[in-house]
Image (cartoon, rainbow, N blue to C red; front, side, top):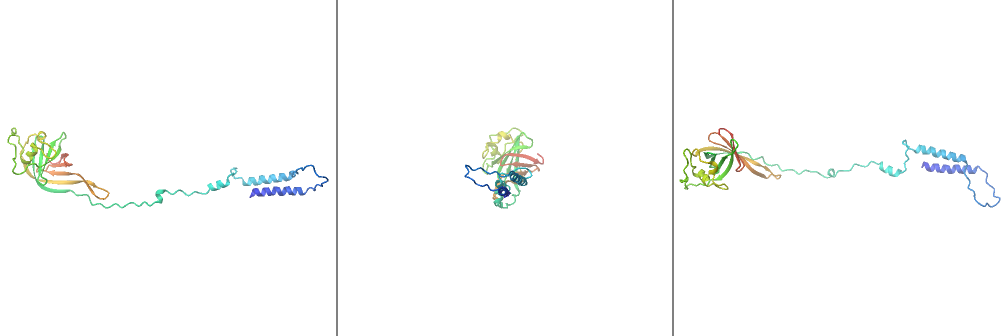
Length: 254
């Protein structure tokens, strides 16, 4: 708008200057048209006015805005982008409440035990299994093998052809069947155990089972091999890890 005022002012000053001069008298047809220059005073005034207005429009930084529309558009604050995660609902699915973890199970059962040159055997009536413990290089630790009881009433209790050396014994009944023939996925245990060093003895065993496992997201119990603890007739506590793996003495006398 100010520049339009400048241009109109220049035109007005020029017209005023021209009006103060006498009109020329045409005496004859001019051979050519000679342009009339505005007075020097009018040009000076116009130049002064233009310089004044230009100084007022010039920002303090002395930079001239050559793209006012683009700069004006860029000066409008742009709203921050909205995150996609913020614009969508993030309701977490409610997980079902699973039951408490299974508790330990303790039971009393008639049992029998027999010690060998390189380990020992347990028979548990409640499970009707032969638990064979073979000595390992580590003190008070054994390799644990779980064998089914392969002997039944009416079968021979031992093998008369096998004669143990003095001070040693041939195991009888279920222990004898596992020792001579093996059972399940295991072969005869005689080579690993050696001769029995005492006779079979009965006792009342305390057997505690500690379940192991975890709950799936839908609260389905996923069991794993648990841990057993067996207390023998002398108060010695044996711990069995896994379904046939490692056994060790954890308390009491060996």
